[in-house]
Image 1 (spheres, rainbow, N blue to C red):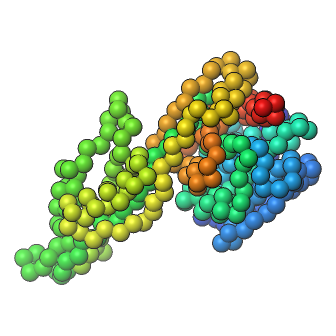
Image 2 (cartoon, one colour; image 1 turned 60 degrees about the vertical axis):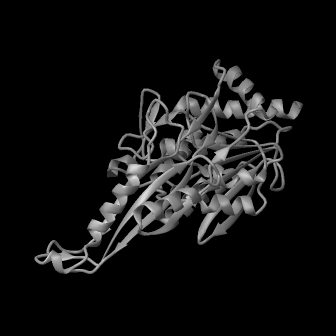
Image 3 (cartoon, rainbow, N blue to C red; image 1 turned 45 degrees about the vertical axis):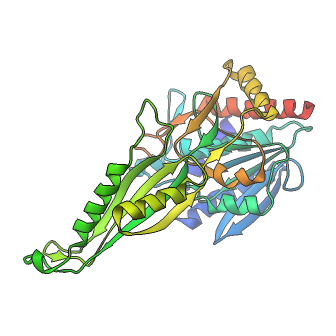
Length: 357
């Protein structure tokens, strides 16, 4: 495990923040050198200057089990977060849980895979800003024969098979700006924006903590105006929706236009993920987890999004899972080092079972 721990620490110190393409590429190159040096079949793809690594223990793009994790991270909360600190079996650092610990777990599983197994892994480069590199790889033909593990979620060993879709919409109010001392002479778009948003909010019911598996809405960014004594010509607001049904985003947009009376444009959208839980491969995964950690996992759902969204169209079972960690995007982020070893053993045990079917 010590060798993989060093790899994890080296990746963290490279600071592969999504917006720093060269830093993310250096992390990709480090993994490429490590895996090719261990005899894995490696291919480097590229999208918009971002390098994407695929590695497998068999030739070709279609292993039985395909693993996916991203190696880009969000910026650190403070400078020292880029320097790993180990305490009581946990490694504290930016990206340790989301998602470099998972990436190193995939490396370990690949390097220690048995000769009769078929495993491939995609290390993507921009999940934190939408995951175009995962979408590119799915469209380029990287597809499992049996099942995909998206290594980006910890839920008490449970297997996540559903996640909400994302719709980010921009509201734009237009008016007539001028000097703030004579508001009667102008049409204030800030007022129009607030009034429109409040009309829509009155029609929308957010879920509760006790009953959260419903579509949600959050206002996240408001912009407009430049100085305190000037009424602007425009004002804007971003709304972040998480929705359940594949066609629900269009319904939300229509409701938004009708209730606010404002201009509505799409900033980002991605589909929800719902995977049937009766696939035999998922049963094998349940058995593998139980054999390694002594816990029979159930099935779970998540409100956030992962790169599973880009692989749904491939028509294969998907399990969203990963190593134990917490504090993603937070001031204190950590990964359980023992869980990296345990989940790599789960992967290898799963492949042994898959090979027997």
